[in-house]
Length: 379
Image 1 (cartoon, helix red, strand yellow):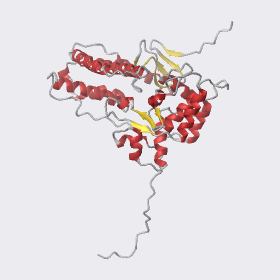
Image 2 (cartoon, helix red, strand yellow; image 1 turned 180 degrees about the vertical axis):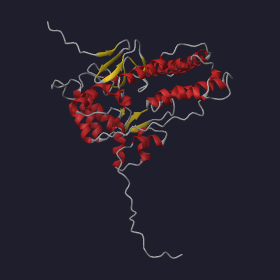
Image 3 (cartoon, rainbow, N blue to C red; image 1 turned 135 degrees about the vertical axis):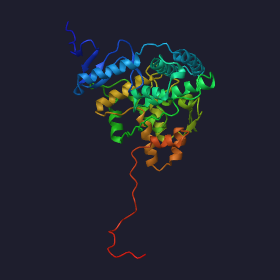
Image 4 (cartoon, rainbow, N blue to C red; image 1 turned 45 degrees about the horizontal axis):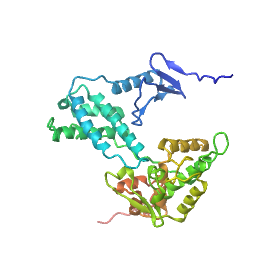
């Protein structure tokens, strides 16, 4: 029996750093937080091989130093643990009653625990009263230019505010004077050509054979675009929410904050997609978009199907979430106002809506200049 040939990997001795795909990659002994994504991972890309071995070793030392800093003797950890207990209790009380939405809630709880664990390790040697703005800034510098830096800053600020108002441990929040570099909005627009290139490849696998999931995921893409809601809301949409007068959405992301909701009208194209889903469905399901077993797709499962289709189509750098931005941008191009789009997207701030609108034509100036006159100007 033939065995699968082993892929060779070059390692930097004693470092757990390997060269794969022309990049230095670190395989930690246990999951750590990736500073680029803010997620716990078992593999972190350090840098391209062209940057050199010393650069890879340096980045690994920085990473290990920030995530595996030994616990110190300060009281920071003890107070953070008290606050963390209160925070997690509060978050747990917000668990959705809908079983389909529970995994998303549990994932958010897990991410919160990871964030607080990293904060604890970063300040374990401090007393709360010792922490200065410069200490917080030095901690945040590791994630400079990344969105996750804003997340750490936010939770640190909330913790120190609790220390002030509830425990009287300090009088000044050391986070207040810290400004982080603004992270630019994702400036990506899916063209119609890219949309349909991925759309068509959902039907054909890498083996050039028809896929079993392609048609349903095509319908998912269509509804993400036509209903312009977050991918989670489409993935977990139930048939009982589909009414003749429209589809009611109460976004999970804003359910506990702004509490916004919206009714999206069912147009002709939406009706066609819904009819197609019923025709290809192999069994009854309470969910509009569902697997062959009638259950909703997991976020990672349907994201993987989209990513593989994009790879087959030769389209890089796009995600399922970019479809919503495309819908907002196309709605603006079709003549809808930003305020109308804001209602549809269930945004409490119009600035958020503007961030979704891409691919806008540059404004055309009506000012036409002429050469300056050689005549002497009169007062």
